[in-house]
Length: 168
Image (cartoon, rainbow, N blue to C red; front, side, top):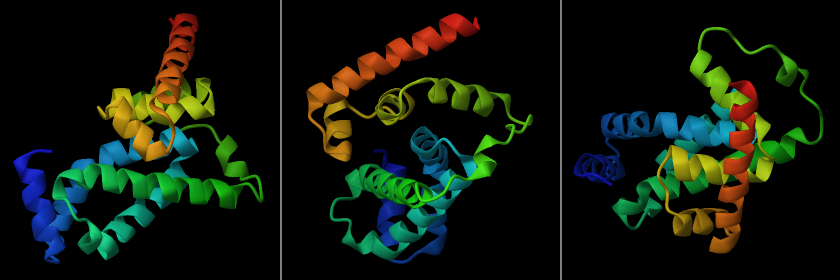
């Protein structure tokens, strides 16, 4: 974590709203990609991100070591995503089956690629390749053994290669 982030976390812990907003803006893209990897739905991903931001603001004083802010925030986001998934299993949301908007081709391709791989491989792939987490950190975040994470990464890469092999 860089000095700017550490500085912003310390200011935010003192209830500096501007510092907290800047801190969240630094991590929005990573939060979105993590939420999409789990939920595969923009509306649900947005809800999970909002809940995460609120939880982070309310519980920022419980963060003991500022250098682990991103890991702490990501764990909160993952928990909110899984909460939303549990809520959504009660009913099928027909909005999930709408055509994606044409405005952002990168997000469409990214979502299609992530949708092409098995659900259990999405989050490790996103955390490792998209956000630079180490296998050990992903293992801790997901409460799985490191060898399981390595297997998920390997299988997810193979499925992505197959997706892009068919698309190109």
